Length: 228
Image (tube, rainbow, N blue to C red):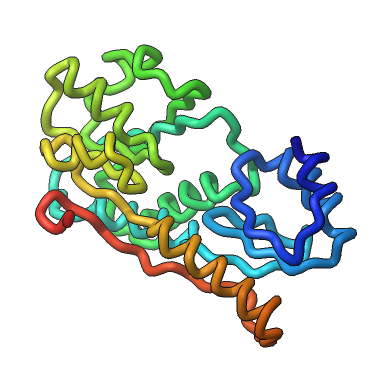
């Protein structure tokens, strides 16, 4: 598939790197075209000159840590649920987790938090079990699949666990509105796509130049009460 894309003659590319290793191979081939590239959502640095549009992944994870910490006085066990087919060491995914931990490292007064992690490579609710959530008070899902955890907790009639995730998928919104999901960090994918096309238009058609290499999307916190 990537070979066919590389054969296609184009003046620029809007690219969202989902699978890291495959994206690196593709970018190696595309570099020879010497055409402008815009990456959205995920950023692969130092591989090809490009303009990035998306959130600061580290800061978004840091924000998630702050949200977890609010209004907590007693001991809290936090579970990080990693649900992804591919988790690369340089990915946005792990930058969010790094930012999450950094928040607590920089706030040493928050001594009543403990952390554990589980990894599920296939997004299947049946891979979750009750033991994973024993004594857990908060859950951080560093991608758009928080609804999988919410679905499991609903099925098991488990209440009182705070869940934070990403993206306004219809599945996530369902559980946000029902009160099972507490917070969603919105990445505004439509705005990312629009700005990416707009950048390429200015670069290719208008031939405008810019020293900027990135535009970071603001971190929107979505709750049941402010979802429109």
